[in-house]
Every structure is written in structure tokens, then in C-alpha cells.
Image 1 (tube, rainbow, N blue to C red):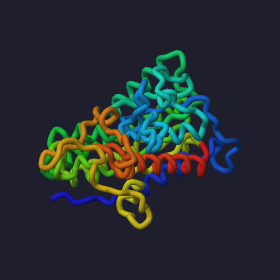
Image 2 (cartoon, helix red, strand yellow):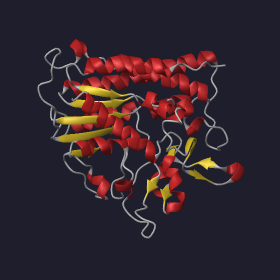
Image 3 (cartoon, rainbow, N blue to C red):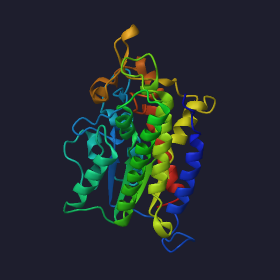
Image 4 (tube, rainbow, N blue to C red):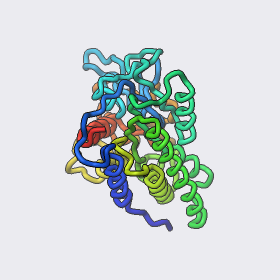
Length: 336
């Protein structure tokens, strides 16, 4: 039997890390001026992704503009969290308008199933281009979920000894993710990066779905270990300067899940909004199908917009809105 760790302790460590990251470059004191990037770069997995050419995302896509006219570009009606940050700096992603060509000042480099390794590859590609990451850039990064699913996929029901070894792998991935933060900061860019949710509470760990069945206690432990590694790997030398901020997604998702009295708009905190089949064959919709098949096309199914989760590990529409607002508030409270 696996014991659940208290992720609030991880969040406390993340808060300490945030304080270290947000020291001024001169070693403390008042910040001289607020950073205004000329480019934003979104890195990570599909929780940060807008599909080029369609403007859809890996969540419940709300195309409802009105009951009389249930049409519209999805991401104009239900932005993902990075769009809130981009909008706050006046750097919107062209993909949201359904454009096939991105803007040079807003690079969408998140990918479906993105891992620490794929983010490293994206950073390498950008840095090998004519416009590498530089001091005028703001980078967002949410990654780690698929690293843990990759590790967990090798053994869905590990023994205690096996889970310990898997935890070591998860922590190493977290340290590597922290190293990505270091690389970005070393180029003078600013970064807003996030922790990952406790996957032990995600739909992939909920029983009753044909493609679920991941051990929740094991996923919880791996989540803890990854965040622990991320905290260790992202601590910058000499205080780091005012280079970045961390959004504690693990803590926020737990708050949304456990505080029904405060977050009353959620209509479901456990099940995914996007499923296929019926009865005993009910399955969580495949990740790749979310942009095309997970759609609210009328006002009758908009309650699904208020599910905490949309897919196996993907956030719901309302959740993205809350995280986006938290991200903007995090930056504004401690300006980069």
C-alpha cells in the first residue's frame, strides 16, 4: 500500500523558490522597471497548445457564441492558460485566429504529449535559428505530466521497491526540467514555469473507464518526486535576479478540487468532460481527439465547460481560465 504525500509541502518549497527567483538583479530592493517582452514563447505539452489552422485546443472546445448562432473560433471563447499571459503583454498567438502561420512575436512551441526531452529539443531548435532565445523574450513552460505517464506506463501496479526506482526517474526528469529553466534564464530571458498537478487525482487514475486504471497512489508519489526534482533543478545561483516566477499548479488544482464552497462554479471535479461510448464501455477520449471531437456545440452541454478536467490529464475550460488568471496575478504581484 502506498502512502499519499502532502503536496502542500512541495508548494511551500516552490514558494521559497519563487522568492529566490524574483530577487532583483542588483541583489534585492526595489525593482527599477517592469519587463515588457517583445516576444512570447510557449513551451510544454498540450495543456499549453493551440492547434494551428483551427484555433482549437486540448480541452472542451466551446464554439457556442449564442443559442441562435452556435459557431465561432474555439479559443476565442475558451482561452487556455498561456493565452491569458500572452494577452496581458499584448502578444496574442496567431493560432487562436485560425491562422496557419504564426506571428514572429508569439511562438507556439508546445506539443501534444510534450516531455522534458521534447522541450529541450524545441529550445535547441529556437537557439539554432536566426532569432534565438534572448533578453527580450518571455517564456512559459508547463511540462512533466507525460514524463510521468511514460515512466508509469512501464508498470501500472508497481511494488514499493519498483515505485521507489520509478520515483528516482521522476525526480531526475524534474531536475532536468529545472535545468531548462536555467538554460532560458542564462540567455537573459524571463520565464513563467509551472509545477504539474497531482496526477493521482486526474481522470487517468479514476476507475470505471476503459483507458484509465493507472494506480492513483503511485501517480501521486511520482508527481511529488517530479516537483521535488523541479524545485531542486531550477534554483538559480546567486539568487538568480528577477528572471522568473513559478505557478504552483499542484496546489491550485488541489484547492479547486477540495474547496467546493469557494469554487462553486465547477460542475464536476472528478470525471473528464470528454468521453466516448456509453455504459460499461465508457472511455476517456484519446488525447489526440480532443481538438476535433471534444466540442460544446449548443447551450445544452455547456455544463461540461465547468468540469475540472477535460481528458485523461488535460484541464477543463474553466480550469484554464482560473489558472490563466492566477498566472497573470502571479506576474503582476511580483513583476518580472
